[in-house]
Image (cartoon, rainbow, N blue to C red):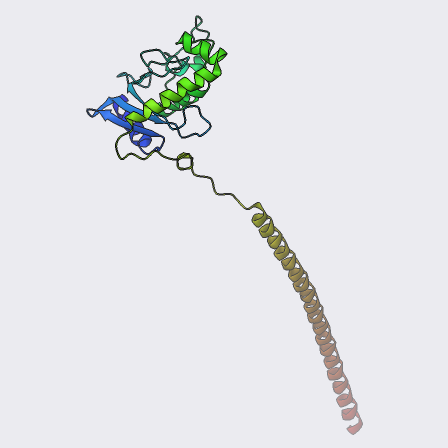
Length: 251
């Protein structure tokens, strides 16, 4: 199961422009990763930070290991490149560290969430729980010196950019914008539909009125026919009476 999950994640992440990933010797449990910082507001903007990720055989029930191959000067990065970050800590609550279970690794986490968390950590270090005490103190008390040290790390990281590789822009790494729905269009359509319904109501009323007139005319015709039949009957009776009188006279 772990192999299938990792292969799917690998294929999906290979499409991301802010990442460069390769399998080490076709081993799906060992990845070479490069994080490309394209946010111009970041201290690490323009950096190409190589790392390696190693996955356990029971992934995703246990977290992967992550290590920068070029260690960075950062409060939460050890001198050997490993990170001190909650999302890579084993599942469950740790009373000693003060981390809740929700902050630590869980089987619902994925490689992408780990990498996004690492990018966020670069610019938002946890000074209260440092892996590099000297970097933590400098970040807290001497920001200018700290920023200059980070700048040097960015310059050094660019030495690892492959020949011919073009760094993506900030715009190219943004997710596609959702198409904006023109609410006025739907309001206009509703209004037109409402007008159409009103016209139908008027047509219905006209039809009803015409229908009533037709019914009235039919009723009048029926009454006229009844009157005609009655006159005809009376006329017939009159003729019979006249004939009888004539016969009596002849007699």
